[in-house]
Length: 190
Image 1: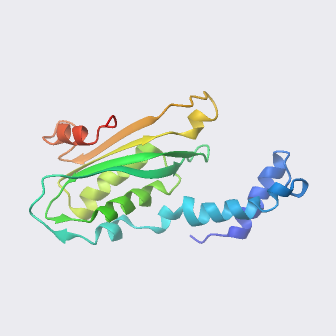
Image 2: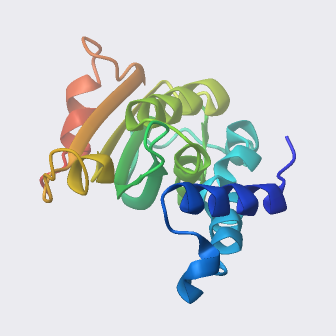
Image 3: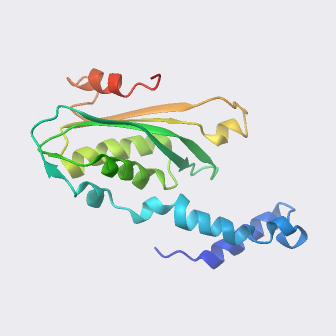
């Protein structure tokens, strides 16, 4: 799908005008439409241009690791309901099959799914499922500890609240042998 930045900029200007803040009446808003369109198209939705299978396709053969975990991957998810950010960290772990990827690939995998309009529940399940499906991991787990601004700056104004979601796949699913190990590795209180 192609991005029409000029149309997006115009839509932001129309939104501001509809909210009683026309860009023509405030010098600080004169470039807001273009800046917002650029930020959304270049950064905030950049995950749509990424492919989990390509990211995990740079795998190396292995037979040596029981679990690989990466903690504190900083990211920011955009809520599809309010179009507000939810910054925080993602932790992930996987039990390799016969392949592993570099830690940078794991970080890129998180961004692939986080830089989209998505719920954090969808984000964590997408990461866990991709590790099993595209890397051939025996099992995977993903935890997101995010601060959704739709909760902190509007609505209930719970300024210090964070939301934690957990998803598992394969041998790390609930009831499977590695589930407890995955949860221990990915605890958010470390």
